Each structure stands twice: as C-alpha cells, then as structure tokens.
Length: 403
Image (cartoon, rainbow, N blue to C red; front, side, top):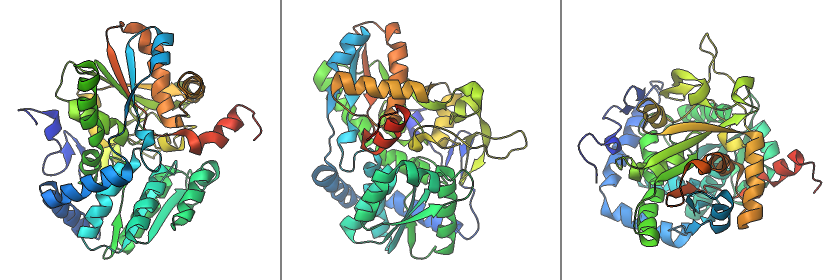
C-alpha cells in the first residue's frame, strides 16, 4: 500500500521519475509503445491475469525463493546478521524469469506471435527462451559478440531451448549494442513482435513494468524476514547493471524510511581508470534506448563504452528510477571492482557453499567492506540474484585455472 508522497507511486502518467524516464522513440514505435502501456494498465487490475501469473510463478518458476541466513559469513565478518534472498534458485538460475513470465503473458494477451530480447550475461536470454519454449512462441535473442564468447554456457542453453541467437558485432559488441539491434528489429516488425526488455530501462512503460514484475522479490522478503526475525531489516543491498534486481528488492520498502538501501555498480578496473560501468558514479544525464537517465558519455555527448568482468553489469546506463533515487538520496550507490568481485565470489563459495554469479558478487564485495560499521543486532538482506554456472570460464581464466 502506498502513502501520500510515496516513492512507490512513480512514474507519473508520462513515464517520468522526477526528470528521468519518458518515452524517446521513433514515430514508428510510438503507437506500439502506447498499446503496450494500455494493455499493461489493464492487466495490473485483472484478477485473472494475476492468478495466471501466480500459478506459473509457483509451479514453474519455483517461487517463493528462500531467504537464507548466511551463518558462516555473518560469523566471519563479525557484524550484522546477513541473509541472502536466493533468487538464483529460480528456474533458469536468476531473477530474470520473474519479469519474463509477466511479459510473455502480456504478449500473449496482446496476440503477439514473435518475441525478441537482448541479453548480456545471457540470463535474460535464457529466461526469455525458456518462456517462449513454454508457450510455443519463436524467440530471437540479440547478444554482443564479446558476450557470446564469455557466456558460452548460456548461449548453448538458449540454443537448446530453441532460440535464434543473433550476434551483434557493432560498437563494444556487448549489451548496449545488443539492445540497439533489438530496437531496430522492433521498428521493422512492429505488428507481430513483442520486445521483452530485460531490465528496468527503455521507454515507458518498460521501466515501471519490469520493476513491478520484479517487486515480488521484496514482497516475499518482507513476509520472510518478519517470520524469521519478527522485524524488518536495517539494510538492503543488491548489485545494479540496468537495475531490475535491485528495484525488485527495494521497491516494497521505499516508504520504510528507516531502512537503508545500497546498490552496487561495477567499478571494473577502477573508477579512476575509465574502464568501468558505474553510470551514477562516473556519468551524467542523457538519453539512450528510449529514456532519459544517467549515462557514461564523453564531453560531446557520445556514449562511452562500459567495462565489467560481469557481462550482466557491462552497460553504460542505468534504469531511470535509479537515477531518481540517486538524486533523491533514498538509495546509496557504491561500487566494486572486478578484482573485489572475484574475491567475493571465492569467499561465498568457500564459506557458504553457494556459487554466486559475478553480478551479486559485486554486492557481496561491498557488504564485506561495510559490515564492520554495523552492530551485531542489525539485519542485512542481500539479493543473490543469480548463480555462477555461467561465469565459470571467466573465473577460471582470471584465476589461471585450466579446466
């Protein structure tokens, strides 16, 4: 339930979170975007849609995902009680399927016969290919050539699920360029195609729609932590690329002003190096992929290439709601380097028997650094948004381990 002046009420009717967001698309796409918005507004209040979505979330996705007390990490850090929201245990191994399931059901309602998506780490591509296989719809996934090489397990999974992978060889050959190509496809095939965007970015209504489908994470956390601790957490922490897993955790608690929130960007080789993906720490407002938000860009407004060891965080922008929360100072935005993420990856494997994706390893890296500032009576929930199967070859290469 939202309250007066609630942060949960945004965006406004034009798709803005303060000055961020909006709908910057070609005339060809505008009618379709308006149609998506109209149909999404319908299903938000449609009990039959909610029942269908809940059914698949429970019986296919595997929700609710567990809230796990990380006892050994808590003891080792000698600080607050640390819980992991284990969304890596969802079907397909990440939070992405929460959003994909919602969007595929919407696409079916709209009578769309062809699904496209972009992917970086491949988790969104796998989740999209999965729901397309489930409902018998053709699936085309755009993926950067660089990401295809470093995420080969997920590429194979997508192919097994029947998806067509289209390699993108322009620009940085990563997530930004894959999204560019997906948008070009959409413009060309507006009548029969639905674009399942993988993060809380893009033109309105996508940032809000993706956030809403992901907010099941925080809704479950509220119930689970009250059951476990009989009170709400003191701190929520999650990694951010585009930002959907963080918003999925945060949104439910935005109006609980006593709860601190930290989102962790990818610092790559270090913020001072210029080779990073920290749009809020090192960027400025601009327009990309249909919305106004913080972007990595040159002095003359050209989009800079982002870098992260994590393909899922390797994006030169951030979802517009994060830009708003950043300027409102409701969420604190920090960063972790590639090296710190790898160390946190190994730390989690060794202490809790959980192999995390490189994305949430960034959040754990920051949690390791700040834990000493929290007393033992404090409670932290971190979103373990993905598992590390997809990253084993990248990690092995970084650690000089031959497989």
